[in-house]
Image (cartoon, rainbow, N blue to C red; front, side, top):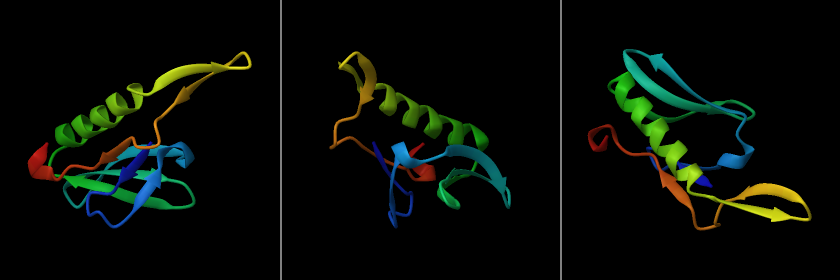
Length: 91
C-alpha cells in the first residue's frame, strides 16, 4: 500500500516503513513514519483526530487480501491501493 502525505509532497511505500508514530509538536498531534529518517505524514489539531487517521490507515491495510503461495501465507495489497492522508478539517 502507498500513503500520500497530507501536503501531497511525497508518497511512501508502507511496506518499507519501520514504524508509524503519533506524537506532539507545538500543540498539534502529528503522524510520522521512520525509514532512514523521521518524516511527518500529517498534522492534526487533536490527538483524537490523529488516532482516527491511524484507524483509517489500519482499516485500509486490513482490506488487503491473504494469499498462500508455496505454503507461505502473506498479505497482498493491490498495486492500486493508496491512502491519502486527510486534512485536519476532513477528520
